[in-house]
Every structure is written in C-alpha cells, then in structure tokens.
Length: 554
Image (cartoon, rainbow, N blue to C red; front, side, top):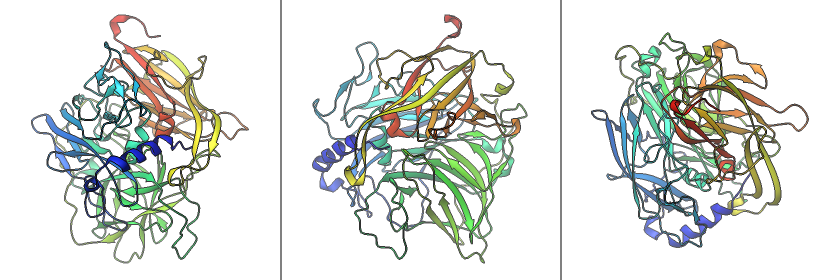
C-alpha cells in the first residue's frame, strides 16, 4: 500500500527551496546519479585503521532532472555513500552534519523527547535525519545505534561511536536514515550505503582470493507519465522504479545497467537490498538458463557458521528472494564468450491483493571485459573469531511469544504524486493479548525481557499483503514457516525475513524464530516491518532488554 502525502509535502518544499545548483543531474550535482544503461561502478571504499574508522558525513538533498527528491551522505572529500570496511572489534567514529534546509514548526514538526531522554534534537521535522547501522549487534544507547529518539536537524552536527563486537559475524551490513515517519522518503532518495565486517574468508574458504563486487539494489518513485516508448508491451506498471548502484532501470523501457566481468571468472557478489519498499527475487540467466548462485551468507551471517565448527557451508540456489533490507553474499561464475545474453533480473513478486505491484524486470546485462575487478578477498588470517549466536539452536527457549501484523483502512485516494496512490492505512505489529496500536515513541515497550534470555517468537500475518519482519540489535534463527519446521541443516540466521500474506480464506501465515538476548545488548530498541512505508505508517514497536541484575525476564 502507498502513502504519498509526506512525500508530496517534502517534494514541494525541496523543489521550492533547494537551489538550482543543487539540482542533481546525470552529469553531476550534490547527489550525482548515473544515467540509464551505464556501467555499474563500485561504491567508494573506506577502511578502518588501527581499529577505528573515522568519517565525517554531510547529509544533502537535491532534485534530479525527473523531479525525484534525492538524499545522500557525502564525506569531506566528496565521496557519496561509501562502503565502510571494519573488522570485528573495531569502532566507527561517525560525525553527521545535516545540511538540509530548515523547516518551521508548522511543517509536520513533532516533539518526541523531553529533557531526560533527548538524543540530539527533541523535535522531529520533515528534514530530520539519523543513522541506523542495520544488522550490527551494537548498543541501542544514544550516540550508538539508537533510532527512536535520535534526531539531527538542519544545521546540526551529531557524533556516533559504534563499537563492532569482537564476535560480530563477518559479512554485509548497511546504514540508512531511520526517522520514524520519513524513513521511506530518505531511503527512496538513496541515502544509504554498505558496511562490510571483514573476515568471511576465515569461515568460508571458497571466497579466498576472489574479486568481490558490492551491489546495492535500490528503489525510487516512478516517473512514468503515460507515454510508452517501447516496441513491446512493458507489462504492468511497477509501484517503484529500480536502480543498481544508482544506475536507474525505469518503466516502461527497462534499459538494464551494465556489469562487466572477465569471461569465466568466479566473483564474490555482496548484494544489499537497500530499497525502502521493494522486494527482489533475483536470478542470473545465461541464454535463458538459470545459473547456480553459491550462497555463503545471509544478512551478514555466514551460512552454517553457528554450529561450533567454525567453518561455513555453501547453499546453492538458482534464485534468491531478498526482502527490503536483506543481504545475500554468493559466488557466481561469469559467462563464457559464446553466451549471447547474460542477464541479472528480478522475478515478479506476488505481494498479495493489497501489496505493491512488483513485476519481473531486468536489472543488468553482463558484458565481457579484459579488465580485472579491483578489490579481492584476502587470504584467511587464522581461525574465525568466536561467533555471536553459536549454539542457539540447542538452547531451550524460556518463553514463546505470539505477535501479528495487521492493517485497518479508511479512505483511499488513487491520485498521488508521480502516480503514487495514497492510502489512509493504519499499520500495526501487535503482541497477542494487547490492543493493536500504531507506533508512538512515548508508549512503553510492548515486550520486556532480560539479558541472557532465549525466546521463540511466532509472528503471524493477518493482512492481505506481505510484511518483512526486522529485528534491531540482534539476529534470529529461522525455525519454521507456516508451521512447517525448517530442516536443521537448512536453518539460517537473519535480521529481516518475509512473512507471507494472508489469502483471507485459510490460516494466517507465520514464521517462527529464535531470539538470542545472551549478548551484551541492553536497553530499548525496536522491531518492525521493513517495508518502510509500513514502518512509517505505524508498524513498529519497542522492546526493552533489562540487565541480568534486574531480575528474571518477563
């Protein structure tokens, strides 16, 4: 479902107040973007030194040639949304300055903190920002990975100090704004980047020495105005256009991006679904034949790495569903010279009767080159670090909780900005036995537990569209889908997983997951649907983890 009201307000405001020199174009701008059909370039890379990655970000906005509102984090030397490379045990010292134009208190401003719990600014506006270090198992306290009350307003500077745990699983994470109510707008605008926690070579020997490619799949508002310039029927109009490392793939022509590979070369692809609202179901086909994708990690956790053996396994699939915010890392082999068409594409998504239109589309065509890919995975440096969630499957849970996604509807307006329908929809995630309620920062936690607890959660979907269950600060082990146990050898760890939609006839779909609160994380944080328009619409709630000394978990 769509909610374009906030997007419209922000677009009108920024179009009026962003200066002409800050309008992004394909040839430059404050948030520069490539054009359709261009070659995919890797994001710039920044690496920690002596255990610390120091970075200064300015948060910018602009409007592109098509009228889309863009957002970006830019370093002092002009790098846009770089990939941050850190090691387990490192620290990210990030300073963020919000350069967006100020808005007055009459433009959607809301007081969300009092004098005792403020973190940054107490007032949220349409141009507030913060940063979520998605998937990292880090502290939810102020100046760390706290998203509920942290606000950086126009002209303000805020400092983050993120301590990556020594037992953090090595793999792909990412960063993005997470101000409740406007998170979808910011991520749609492209303000996000990858985080790589190094060391996967110590668990997955198959990647050693391979060229590695960081790929960020994003979405953005469609710009289609009714003029189909295509030799064939483009099919249904999508709710969102796509991009790959910012190379746009837009309706109706769907001109693919270009990925250049050496013939027959194995590569290590590290893929982030950095979209706000789009689900991807990717496949790689050579002359129409699906190619094997050798998966070595989901959501930053190497596959099969938590069984105590300190060595991962390879999971081979021909296609991979990646929910918004999901990450997958896999090995692919480039086509040989006799392949006529090599294409990365997304299969059509059935998101449910009330879900977004997400048709199958090309993403990128592969062209052969003699030039090697620059960044390679290093050699194993020794035994893997202790793994954070090791042994979770063997622990008996202390409690089983039941939660559910649901929606209620009022008025639907099919006329929205840039063909976006706007729906007055209330989105909820509710603990069974409690009353459905849209997220309110001032509400008490819906769940309270204690550090050291291990819990099983069963999350139902009572809505006629899919929802994506995301947990902050920890990962969870997937145990069952729709009541059917996942075979032990196929169980993996995630921080975001899709709950199928209800067909309005049969049983409610569900997933069962095992939550691990044995780590050092204590405090308040959130869980929500990671279709960000749903999160912005209220589908989020707080959990409080008490220190062990404060008693048994509730």
